[in-house]
Image (cartoon, rainbow, N blue to C red; front, side, top):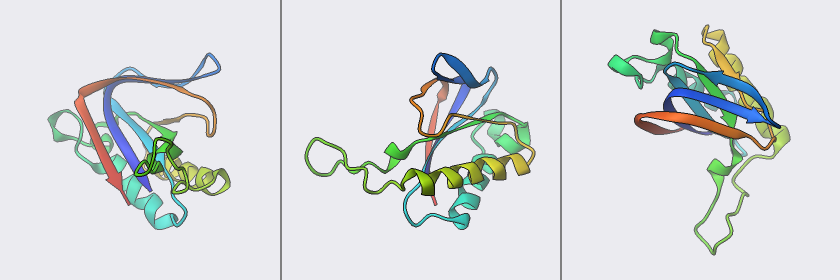
Length: 141
């Protein structure tokens, strides 16, 4: 499992012209990708990193600050571009495998008492954010 964590001063996810998630204070946008052999251990690691990494102002974490999180599923994090000009998506888990694991990350964050918005799995989404810093971190579990 991979996650790209972006500290943002504001963010939103829009699907079919409707805003499905947003925040307007410092928080984290987490783009989460799932591969074939991911499971509960990777879910817990990614959720812990999202919640506890000290990425916000004053070296605080999302959990410390009560900051919002938006989780967006992104299979493209497993693109393989080593050959040719067309990415291979073979490293990404198929939807029936990936969707419950992304949902489990969201559930694990909410179980920590965090405010978590989401995108819509498999939908074409417009993800907008003001990258604060900029601060972008890659986490692998």
